[in-house]
Length: 364
Image (cartoon, rainbow, N blue to C red; front, side, top):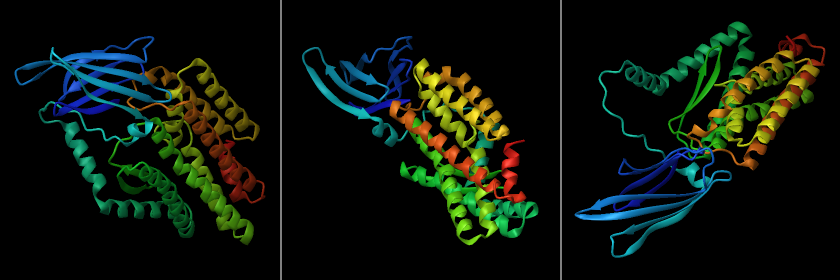
């Protein structure tokens, strides 16, 4: 991931690195210094390299103090022409700086005709066409009307839009450009952004805000049902909770997969990994206790997949969560799952077969 980008003699000096200790320093997109990965990387590092300024050879030294969790980087850049030393630049960077930085795409070598590139361009044009939003929305309305009723289909689409709006709000919270919401028949919705994220916290926050908005909507529908006794709102509360609960399963590319993967990839100790595993085991046990067998099974399968990928955490391009971020993310995830399960379980006790259907699905 990009750690630092500063000006050096009128050109860009860029430092990239990973938690494993690998670092590469580029001046004007040319590699000038590199450190290999290490089993026990040091927090201090030094890059020495030479640059040409006209006819003059300059010796350059970039000194770094780097801590990953919580992230903190201090640097100083010194130049020497053999007669005198000059401090060209120094400063510090925090996680907020990493979140705010804009990553420019690396230069690519020109290729011959690439069908993959043509397909990618076609997909971009496909996604950018506003008329597709209307077509997808109409298709979703027709699909859900065929499955349910027109009234329930409209209400369900509004639930999907509210879920995706949570993602959009989260993206805007970090200043990311958004392309809007797409409804996909029989699948759900999709919130798109043109910008890339830089930290695991951004990934967690954006991913969980959709289901969290869904939980708020289910609670609101439940309250309206409790006050008015209109069963339409009870059905919306139950099925919206079920929809958002499945979105929180730890399987990529679902929201839950992004959340738990970000937590697991940020854990840098066996103790932390054990804590994550105990949390998942507790979730599986509670699922079986409340007769949510399907939820417990899928939770276990998805968590095993994420644990297997834990060893690849050091090669990620995203800044990992610090210990506080890991705890907050885990508590937010499990409390959202618990809230959605509670809505489904409470409504299933009403004696109405339709309201009990989401619970039966989870108990299958």
